[in-house]
Image (cartoon, rainbow, N blue to C red; front, side, top):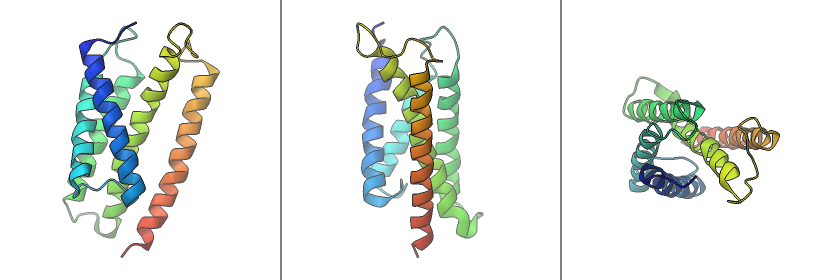
Length: 159
């Protein structure tokens, strides 16, 4: 099934923001709202999540729509947390968790789309319950948790 214009927009912006996230996490070990690229990432993430709400590939609202709502919530909550003193010393950890979670929320539907669309004539996965897809989700989640623990440890060592 070809992509709709909204699907193309969603895919292009989503791909760009994932690339931004990789760069930011590699360079800064976190997604920082005070960096121009961090702001671009967060705005692009909001656009990607909002556009996902208008895509109904499987006939109606589904888990991808839930991830889009969680993504929007993580960006909004992280933004407000970054601009408050309410959390005290825990602020940097909470903001990092919110913004890093958006990367996880990007990767799950990205993996789904790649595995259900490619190769075009015979996709690797034909069902959302396919064991390959479920194992892919597990790998993404385990890698996310490992990197999150490393990120939190790195933040702990920062002044």
